Length: 310
Image 1 (cartoon, rainbow, N blue to C red):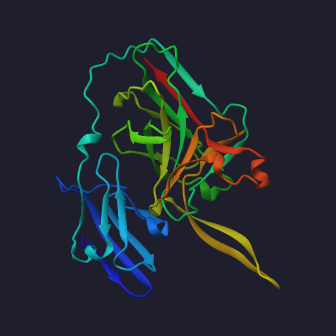
Image 2: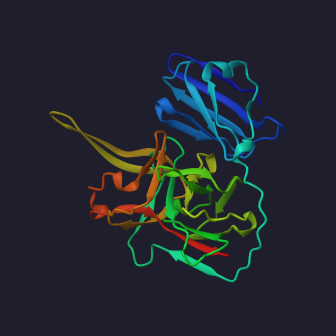
């Protein structure tokens, strides 16, 4: 698969394939972002991608990110002479080898959304680039020795049939950084989850990955993939006000990406610990503008159900 950029005054059309630099095997669902324009896309199942950039010159830098591999920053102009984008495995991201005996004697379920009003959490960029939402979970005090992530249940939100179709997303389990925000991956495998059509929840078993829960806790995150099968069209009427008149865009079509995850509304409090990620990094969801009546003065947070075991 040739990788090149065809440049013009108006548009750069980038086509290529992402592979493992050591094995030359395709890397599926790599996220690709042009941070200066806050635009992005995802490679497909065979690592192939097509990225159309308007107004970007050949000096622009594309960011390629993939769990377990070093992030690559590639000059758009250099892609003219490249056949593929090669990503190096990140040896430092590999988990330390330890021996654990999982007992399954002690189990705890954490369900923070019971009794709260539901809300949909779509892509936080409005369909411009892949984004993530994450929620913090503390390690329970009653786990004195081993504590492992056994299962994550992710729920979905839909208001029409168009949003109920099959789609894929990436599950991330993240450690807590020094600033309290989501940081490196505790789950070092690229875990792609498929939502079945008309399914409103999926249970993801994780005990096989033997993820020990650090004393400072962890984050569960879901990441959108900008792939063709996840696309859906949102049609809305938009009003744009000028000095002397109003422009009405009737049935305006916007391409967005499934799935829409289920969230809940929560009050702003000192320990509010749900985040979203854009091209500028992680931000707390209680920093969002919640003036719209749908929020009722509260803030959205992901609705995950967590099971831990010893």
